[in-house]
Amino acid sequence: MNINDVVSELKQKIGERYVSDDPEIQFLYHYDFITTEPEGKCDIAIMPDTAEQVQEIVKIANKYKIPVIPWVSGINFGSIATPRKGGIVVDLRRLNRVLEVNEDDMYAVVEGGITWADLKGYLDRNHPDLKAGITWSPPGTGVIPSCLCYGMYDLGMLGGTGAEFINGLEVVLGSGELIRVGSCSLSNYWYGRQPLPDLAGLFIGWEGTTGIVTKAAIKLWPKLPYRADFLPIAPRIDDGIPMILKLSKAGLGIIDLCALNIGWCQALMGLDEEHVAKDPLEFGLPDFFGLISTQAYTEKQHEAQCEGIMNICKEYDMDPLPIKEQLESFPENLQGIMGHLTPSTGGQTPVQFWGCWNFTRGGGGQWIGTYCSTRDIIKFYNISREICLKYDKPPQFYSRIMMGGHYCVARTNIGFNKNDPEDIKKTRILLKEIHKAVQKLDGVVMYKPPLWAVQYYKDKTLPATTKLIEKIRKILDPNKIMNPGQGI
Ligand SMILES: Cc1cc2nc3c(=O)[nH]c(=O)nc-3n(C[C@H](O)[C@H](O)[C@H](O)COP(=O)(O)OP(=O)(O)OC[C@H]3O[C@@H](n4cnc5c(N)ncnc54)[C@H](O)[C@@H]3O)c2cc1C
Image (cartoon, rainbow, N blue to C red; front, side, top):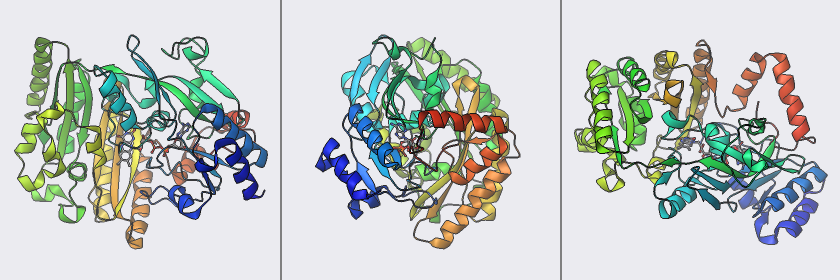
């Protein structure tokens, strides 16, 4: 295959301006700029504007048997959009339109490359009573990849993961065919995946190895007038988690429920890791910070919810001050960027805010991010904390309780200096050590797993399950061009 032939054929179909094999453009897509994962190679970058153009790209890629990598911002934390075997990186960010908002069934039909900033801006302007959830990822990251990769938002207690927010999909398969799944396959409504065979699962959790989603409907939720965010603090994670778990099952209208350790809070506050206590417990600093968000339709209903929250916190000797008040009780130099929260945000963090968080000088960060049983949160934290401290790194831990307490996310992030090869090496070893150690807790499974973790899961799954996955991939992507080298 001559790459120049591919470039000129792509230029004919998509337009000169949106296809490039210039080295400075290739560089932008060759790795994720955040993690310790190895770099890849982008041969051609392309920006289609329609589903038909995506089909054209995939057909050309099939003709030349060249890899195709769907991409929105490429900073998913697992390096799963890094082109492992070269090929065409399909930057989907021109496909960023909101096509419809159905206020009755509360969903938005969007294109496959829409970013969180695009969506939130559109909803705030046109449908201020509805929300899509807020991620802690930077505003320029993708909504659809987040949903497809089991990402999560500040509505996790209501709706579970982003995958559960998907009502329907339009997808260009690896073969180049266009399909639709969900109610949109039979009608103009995109209200859900029920009651047909649930084919959305062929694209969720596959890291772009089965097709490119060109349209999707995602659930929206009502923004109710009464809401509050509380930040209870306790000496240790072990003290706070039982309280969080009790709250999760108390039916108190909680929409988001998280537990953060001090390391994660310091990262969110934009504090430099060089200047923070590695082991806060040594200095008598608190290590548990809860994040409880509520909303209600009437004042009375909200008062009752808040009273219920207060009572449960008090049972565990905690005072759930509202987030702003709690932050004001910190010394000013410890408020960091969180000190910029103002009443004008309505107690809700603006989407840009979370994207500001800083890992360390040198800007590297990578986590062991997992789904697991709520039984194992404390054990997960203590195992990973011990390993981080052994390597002289502050553990940054976060757990989010999902879907009314049915399961949870537990993850430990490591900040590192991308300019320091020794630090990168140490972080790689440390991440693998945490991953191996938390596997002792049955049921800890990484989402957006980097390559080395994928292999671990492949070896562990029943052989017939692995074979079935391979067979499905072959049907959807007969020439194995879709994001090769990634996915389970
Ligand atoms: C600081 C920080 C905080 C974060 N916090 C959160 C968080 O709170 N919640 C959360 O969910 N995530 C979080 N993330 C992870 C991630 O950035 C988001 O999930 C994001 O929305 C994914 O978009 P992306 O643009 O990074 O995806 P990409 O890296 O571009 O893509 C991710 C995967 O999806 C595939 N893909 C992309 N688009 C398509 C498509 N249209 N069809 C099929 N496959 C596709 C890619 O090939 C790749 O395998 C965070 C990341 C950072 C850096």
